[in-house]
Image: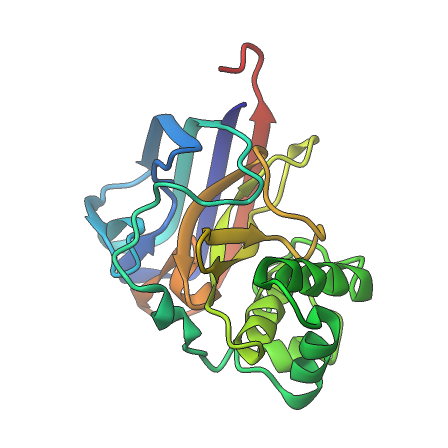
Length: 267
């Protein structure tokens, strides 16, 4: 499948900023089932961009801008070829051992109720089957999880409320941790069939003998050829599409527009 992605992020500041430093995790990497055939990042003001690879193996672009800046627009455009892999991640850049992803963060620590549900839902038996059951249990319990901006909630807090799709990914990771299984957060894109699609987040868990397997608890399924992986980390904070600091007074206003479309003439 050939997917065309057009992603615009706009910041407006109530007072001019003296300096911006941002980490852009907006560029997908190549795997056996995902090939970037064209990609560019454009910024509407004078900035310095430096490409790098972070500790998780993600492609990142560091952005440096000197003020005064009262607005900035970052545009990403490109095409990615994807193939169906039943959620299996093959050929990704993996500088860290799977065991590291047994670590929890404040956002992925399982509370008692969440851990109990994970054990009940997963049951016993084959690891892959247990993870599928956990994924389906979350989709059934929270069927209306929408793609919304990151809430900042912990997995335990979100589990007790009305989680969005990104929250559900943290809940999945927390449940996998309660089961003693390595899991991580994934940020990226999903073709939702409507052209305009919000940025998406899902999870991956390690299955011995198979490798990393993707699970999307907001869909109750594994990611397919409609998904484009961009960044992985222990939680959303480490895989956020844009993160950074600014020097200046006032508040910021953020708006995001994203289109993910399947193109004719798929490879």
